[in-house]
Length: 327
Image (cartoon, rainbow, N blue to C red; front, side):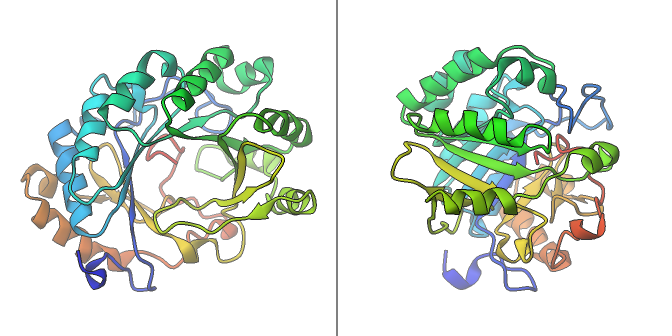
Protein backbone atom coordinates (compact mmCIF):
# COMPACT_ATOMS: atom_id res chain seq x y z
CA UNK A 1 0.00 0.00 0.00
CA UNK A 2 1.26 3.47 -0.83
CA UNK A 3 2.25 5.62 2.11
CA UNK A 4 -0.40 8.25 1.38
CA UNK A 5 -3.12 5.55 1.59
CA UNK A 6 -2.40 4.73 5.23
CA UNK A 7 -5.36 5.57 7.43
CA UNK A 8 -4.97 9.05 8.92
CA UNK A 9 -7.25 11.14 11.13
CA UNK A 10 -7.88 14.88 11.08
CA UNK A 11 -5.04 15.48 13.55
CA UNK A 12 -2.35 13.93 11.35
CA UNK A 13 -2.08 10.66 13.26
CA UNK A 14 -1.58 7.46 11.25
CA UNK A 15 -2.83 4.08 12.32
CA UNK A 16 -0.69 0.97 11.94
CA UNK A 17 -2.07 -1.09 14.82
CA UNK A 18 -5.43 -2.81 15.41
CA UNK A 19 -6.53 -4.12 18.80
CA UNK A 20 -9.26 -6.65 18.05
CA UNK A 21 -11.18 -7.94 21.07
CA UNK A 22 -12.41 -11.49 20.54
CA UNK A 23 -14.46 -11.68 23.76
CA UNK A 24 -15.29 -9.42 26.68
CA UNK A 25 -15.64 -12.41 29.03
CA UNK A 26 -12.90 -12.74 31.65
CA UNK A 27 -12.31 -15.41 34.29
CA UNK A 28 -10.31 -13.12 36.62
CA UNK A 29 -11.69 -10.70 39.20
CA UNK A 30 -9.01 -8.03 39.29
CA UNK A 31 -9.62 -5.32 41.88
CA UNK A 32 -9.28 -2.46 39.37
CA UNK A 33 -11.36 -3.98 36.55
CA UNK A 34 -13.89 -6.71 37.46
CA UNK A 35 -13.81 -7.04 41.27
CA UNK A 36 -17.20 -8.80 41.24
CA UNK A 37 -16.41 -10.99 38.26
CA UNK A 38 -17.67 -10.76 34.70
CA UNK A 39 -21.26 -9.59 34.17
CA UNK A 40 -22.69 -9.79 30.64
CA UNK A 41 -23.85 -6.40 29.35
CA UNK A 42 -25.06 -7.36 25.87
CA UNK A 43 -26.88 -10.04 23.88
CA UNK A 44 -24.86 -9.98 20.66
CA UNK A 45 -22.60 -12.94 19.82
CA UNK A 46 -18.85 -12.42 19.51
CA UNK A 47 -17.36 -12.02 16.06
CA UNK A 48 -16.91 -15.34 14.30
CA UNK A 49 -13.54 -16.32 12.84
CA UNK A 50 -14.82 -15.39 9.37
CA UNK A 51 -16.03 -12.00 10.61
CA UNK A 52 -12.75 -11.35 12.43
CA UNK A 53 -10.90 -12.24 9.22
CA UNK A 54 -12.92 -9.62 7.30
CA UNK A 55 -12.06 -7.02 9.94
CA UNK A 56 -8.35 -7.81 9.73
CA UNK A 57 -8.35 -7.77 5.92
CA UNK A 58 -10.08 -4.38 5.91
CA UNK A 59 -7.63 -2.84 8.35
CA UNK A 60 -4.71 -4.30 6.42
CA UNK A 61 -6.03 -2.48 3.33
CA UNK A 62 -5.88 0.71 5.43
CA UNK A 63 -2.22 0.21 6.35
CA UNK A 64 -2.48 -1.82 9.56
CA UNK A 65 0.72 -3.81 10.17
CA UNK A 66 0.05 -5.26 13.60
CA UNK A 67 -2.98 -7.03 15.07
CA UNK A 68 -3.40 -7.69 18.77
CA UNK A 69 -6.09 -10.18 19.81
CA UNK A 70 -7.37 -9.20 23.22
CA UNK A 71 -10.35 -9.51 25.55
CA UNK A 72 -11.64 -9.97 28.20
CA UNK A 73 -9.59 -13.13 28.20
CA UNK A 74 -9.03 -14.38 24.63
CA UNK A 75 -7.90 -17.86 25.72
CA UNK A 76 -11.52 -18.56 26.73
CA UNK A 77 -12.22 -18.91 23.00
CA UNK A 78 -11.34 -22.44 21.88
CA UNK A 79 -10.84 -21.15 18.33
CA UNK A 80 -8.13 -18.67 19.33
CA UNK A 81 -5.45 -20.59 17.37
CA UNK A 82 -7.61 -20.22 14.26
CA UNK A 83 -7.97 -16.49 14.92
CA UNK A 84 -4.19 -16.18 15.31
CA UNK A 85 -3.68 -18.07 12.04
CA UNK A 86 -6.20 -15.82 10.28
CA UNK A 87 -4.30 -12.74 11.44
CA UNK A 88 -0.93 -14.20 10.50
CA UNK A 89 -2.05 -15.08 6.98
CA UNK A 90 -3.71 -11.71 6.28
CA UNK A 91 -1.69 -9.95 3.55
CA UNK A 92 -0.05 -6.84 5.00
CA UNK A 93 -0.12 -7.95 8.64
CA UNK A 94 3.46 -8.27 9.82
CA UNK A 95 3.01 -8.93 13.53
CA UNK A 96 0.40 -10.84 15.53
CA UNK A 97 0.09 -10.46 19.30
CA UNK A 98 -2.15 -11.81 22.06
CA UNK A 99 -2.84 -10.26 25.46
CA UNK A 100 -3.79 -12.79 28.14
CA UNK A 101 -4.01 -13.20 31.90
CA UNK A 102 -1.95 -16.36 31.43
CA UNK A 103 -4.27 -18.72 33.29
CA UNK A 104 -4.17 -21.31 30.48
CA UNK A 105 -0.78 -20.33 29.09
CA UNK A 106 1.28 -23.49 29.76
CA UNK A 107 -1.22 -25.73 27.95
CA UNK A 108 -1.91 -23.38 25.02
CA UNK A 109 1.24 -21.45 24.17
CA UNK A 110 2.64 -24.14 21.85
CA UNK A 111 -0.52 -24.15 19.73
CA UNK A 112 -0.49 -20.35 19.57
CA UNK A 113 3.13 -20.37 18.42
CA UNK A 114 2.35 -23.00 15.78
CA UNK A 115 -0.54 -20.81 14.56
CA UNK A 116 1.81 -17.88 13.97
CA UNK A 117 1.97 -15.88 17.21
CA UNK A 118 4.80 -13.32 17.23
CA UNK A 119 4.25 -11.49 20.51
CA UNK A 120 2.69 -12.30 23.87
CA UNK A 121 1.55 -9.90 26.58
CA UNK A 122 0.75 -11.35 30.00
CA UNK A 123 -0.85 -9.39 32.84
CA UNK A 124 0.97 -9.82 36.16
CA UNK A 125 0.51 -7.07 38.73
CA UNK A 126 2.69 -8.64 41.43
CA UNK A 127 5.37 -11.34 41.70
CA UNK A 128 4.25 -12.09 45.25
CA UNK A 129 1.93 -15.13 45.00
CA UNK A 130 -0.32 -14.07 47.88
CA UNK A 131 -0.69 -10.52 46.58
CA UNK A 132 -1.29 -11.80 43.06
CA UNK A 133 -4.10 -14.04 44.35
CA UNK A 134 -5.62 -11.13 46.28
CA UNK A 135 -5.61 -8.82 43.24
CA UNK A 136 -6.89 -11.34 40.69
CA UNK A 137 -8.94 -13.83 42.69
CA UNK A 138 -6.75 -16.72 41.44
CA UNK A 139 -3.79 -18.40 43.15
CA UNK A 140 -1.96 -19.42 39.98
CA UNK A 141 1.14 -17.22 39.65
CA UNK A 142 3.68 -20.11 39.42
CA UNK A 143 1.71 -21.66 36.54
CA UNK A 144 1.63 -18.35 34.67
CA UNK A 145 5.38 -17.84 35.14
CA UNK A 146 6.01 -21.34 33.79
CA UNK A 147 3.95 -20.41 30.73
CA UNK A 148 6.12 -17.35 30.21
CA UNK A 149 9.25 -19.50 30.46
CA UNK A 150 7.83 -21.72 27.72
CA UNK A 151 6.99 -18.72 25.53
CA UNK A 152 10.60 -17.57 25.82
CA UNK A 153 11.81 -21.06 24.91
CA UNK A 154 9.67 -20.79 21.77
CA UNK A 155 11.32 -17.44 20.97
CA UNK A 156 8.08 -15.48 21.32
CA UNK A 157 8.64 -11.80 22.09
CA UNK A 158 7.10 -11.54 25.55
CA UNK A 159 5.89 -8.55 27.55
CA UNK A 160 4.41 -8.41 31.03
CA UNK A 161 1.84 -5.78 31.97
CA UNK A 162 1.66 -4.51 35.57
CA UNK A 163 -0.80 -1.85 36.71
CA UNK A 164 0.75 0.77 38.98
CA UNK A 165 -1.03 0.87 42.34
CA UNK A 166 -0.15 3.36 45.08
CA UNK A 167 0.11 0.83 47.93
CA UNK A 168 3.34 -1.20 47.73
CA UNK A 169 4.70 0.29 44.49
CA UNK A 170 8.34 0.21 45.59
CA UNK A 171 8.20 -3.34 46.96
CA UNK A 172 6.71 -4.62 43.70
CA UNK A 173 9.29 -2.64 41.70
CA UNK A 174 12.20 -4.30 43.55
CA UNK A 175 10.68 -7.75 42.96
CA UNK A 176 10.30 -7.06 39.25
CA UNK A 177 13.81 -5.60 38.96
CA UNK A 178 15.31 -8.75 40.49
CA UNK A 179 13.32 -10.85 38.03
CA UNK A 180 14.42 -8.73 35.05
CA UNK A 181 18.08 -9.27 35.89
CA UNK A 182 17.89 -12.67 34.20
CA UNK A 183 14.50 -12.75 32.45
CA UNK A 184 14.42 -11.28 28.91
CA UNK A 185 10.90 -9.85 28.92
CA UNK A 186 9.67 -6.28 28.65
CA UNK A 187 7.89 -5.28 31.85
CA UNK A 188 5.39 -2.49 31.20
CA UNK A 189 4.12 -0.44 34.12
CA UNK A 190 0.70 0.98 33.27
CA UNK A 191 -0.91 3.86 35.14
CA UNK A 192 -4.26 2.89 36.62
CA UNK A 193 -7.00 4.43 34.46
CA UNK A 194 -10.38 5.59 35.69
CA UNK A 195 -13.41 3.81 34.21
CA UNK A 196 -17.12 4.05 34.85
CA UNK A 197 -17.01 1.21 37.36
CA UNK A 198 -13.86 1.98 39.36
CA UNK A 199 -14.11 5.66 40.34
CA UNK A 200 -13.64 5.11 44.08
CA UNK A 201 -10.89 2.54 43.56
CA UNK A 202 -9.12 4.91 41.17
CA UNK A 203 -9.28 7.78 43.65
CA UNK A 204 -7.65 5.61 46.33
CA UNK A 205 -5.07 3.81 44.23
CA UNK A 206 -3.95 5.97 41.30
CA UNK A 207 -0.28 6.90 41.19
CA UNK A 208 1.42 8.70 38.32
CA UNK A 209 4.23 6.99 36.47
CA UNK A 210 6.38 10.13 36.18
CA UNK A 211 8.05 9.60 39.57
CA UNK A 212 8.90 5.99 38.73
CA UNK A 213 10.26 7.07 35.35
CA UNK A 214 12.60 9.60 36.99
CA UNK A 215 13.75 6.92 39.41
CA UNK A 216 14.60 4.57 36.53
CA UNK A 217 16.45 7.26 34.58
CA UNK A 218 18.49 8.15 37.67
CA UNK A 219 19.39 4.46 38.00
CA UNK A 220 20.82 4.36 34.47
CA UNK A 221 17.89 3.13 32.39
CA UNK A 222 18.00 4.57 28.84
CA UNK A 223 15.09 5.31 26.50
CA UNK A 224 15.02 3.47 23.16
CA UNK A 225 13.28 4.53 19.91
CA UNK A 226 9.64 3.54 19.40
CA UNK A 227 8.59 1.52 16.33
CA UNK A 228 5.78 2.75 14.06
CA UNK A 229 3.47 -0.12 15.08
CA UNK A 230 4.50 -0.19 18.74
CA UNK A 231 2.09 0.37 21.59
CA UNK A 232 2.08 3.51 23.74
CA UNK A 233 4.89 2.47 26.11
CA UNK A 234 8.17 4.34 26.39
CA UNK A 235 10.70 1.53 26.71
CA UNK A 236 13.99 1.62 28.62
CA UNK A 237 17.03 -0.66 28.67
CA UNK A 238 19.87 -1.10 31.13
CA UNK A 239 23.16 -2.94 30.51
CA UNK A 240 22.85 -4.87 33.77
CA UNK A 241 19.41 -6.32 32.99
CA UNK A 242 18.27 -8.99 30.54
CA UNK A 243 14.79 -7.48 30.48
CA UNK A 244 13.42 -4.05 29.58
CA UNK A 245 11.02 -1.70 31.32
CA UNK A 246 8.22 0.22 29.62
CA UNK A 247 5.92 2.91 31.00
CA UNK A 248 2.42 3.70 29.80
CA UNK A 249 1.32 7.01 31.31
CA UNK A 250 -2.05 8.05 29.88
CA UNK A 251 -2.32 11.04 32.22
CA UNK A 252 0.91 12.58 30.93
CA UNK A 253 0.95 15.66 28.71
CA UNK A 254 0.57 14.95 24.97
CA UNK A 255 0.04 11.21 25.52
CA UNK A 256 -2.49 11.07 22.68
CA UNK A 257 -0.33 12.79 20.07
CA UNK A 258 1.46 9.50 19.28
CA UNK A 259 -1.72 7.40 19.06
CA UNK A 260 -1.35 4.83 16.27
CA UNK A 261 -4.03 2.26 17.15
CA UNK A 262 -7.74 1.64 16.75
CA UNK A 263 -9.96 -0.86 18.51
CA UNK A 264 -12.78 -3.13 17.38
CA UNK A 265 -14.88 -4.84 20.04
CA UNK A 266 -15.91 -8.48 20.05
CA UNK A 267 -19.37 -7.32 18.97
CA UNK A 268 -18.01 -5.50 15.93
CA UNK A 269 -17.96 -1.92 17.13
CA UNK A 270 -15.20 0.49 16.18
CA UNK A 271 -13.80 2.37 19.16
CA UNK A 272 -11.82 5.37 17.97
CA UNK A 273 -10.49 5.75 21.51
CA UNK A 274 -10.41 3.53 24.58
CA UNK A 275 -12.52 6.19 26.27
CA UNK A 276 -14.86 7.17 23.42
CA UNK A 277 -18.48 7.76 24.41
CA UNK A 278 -19.65 4.79 22.35
CA UNK A 279 -18.52 2.29 19.75
CA UNK A 280 -19.50 2.78 16.12
CA UNK A 281 -21.34 -0.27 14.81
CA UNK A 282 -19.57 -2.04 11.94
CA UNK A 283 -21.39 -5.38 12.19
CA UNK A 284 -23.56 -4.93 9.10
CA UNK A 285 -20.54 -4.05 6.95
CA UNK A 286 -18.51 -6.88 8.51
CA UNK A 287 -21.23 -9.42 7.70
CA UNK A 288 -21.00 -8.62 3.98
CA UNK A 289 -17.58 -10.28 4.03
CA UNK A 290 -16.33 -7.49 1.76
CA UNK A 291 -13.12 -6.03 3.20
CA UNK A 292 -13.14 -3.13 0.74
CA UNK A 293 -16.61 -2.03 1.83
CA UNK A 294 -15.63 -2.26 5.49
CA UNK A 295 -12.38 -0.37 4.89
CA UNK A 296 -14.24 2.51 3.28
CA UNK A 297 -16.66 2.67 6.21
CA UNK A 298 -13.76 2.85 8.67
CA UNK A 299 -12.08 5.52 6.55
CA UNK A 300 -15.29 7.57 6.63
CA UNK A 301 -15.55 7.27 10.43
CA UNK A 302 -11.95 8.15 11.32
CA UNK A 303 -12.70 11.85 11.08
CA UNK A 304 -14.72 11.52 14.30
CA UNK A 305 -11.64 10.68 16.36
CA UNK A 306 -11.03 13.26 19.08
CA UNK A 307 -7.64 14.87 19.66
CA UNK A 308 -7.50 13.49 23.23
CA UNK A 309 -9.11 10.95 25.55
CA UNK A 310 -9.70 13.78 28.10
CA UNK A 311 -8.91 11.48 31.01
CA UNK A 312 -7.37 14.45 32.78
CA UNK A 313 -10.87 15.97 33.00
CA UNK A 314 -12.31 12.78 34.50
CA UNK A 315 -13.87 11.61 31.22
CA UNK A 316 -14.37 7.84 31.01
CA UNK A 317 -16.70 7.81 28.01
CA UNK A 318 -18.58 4.57 27.57
CA UNK A 319 -15.83 2.43 29.11
CA UNK A 320 -17.34 0.85 32.20
CA UNK A 321 -14.39 -1.52 32.62
CA UNK A 322 -11.33 -2.42 30.59
CA UNK A 323 -12.48 -5.94 29.71
CA UNK A 324 -15.07 -4.47 27.34
CA UNK A 325 -12.58 -3.65 24.58
CA UNK A 326 -9.32 -5.05 25.83
CA UNK A 327 -7.71 -2.10 27.55
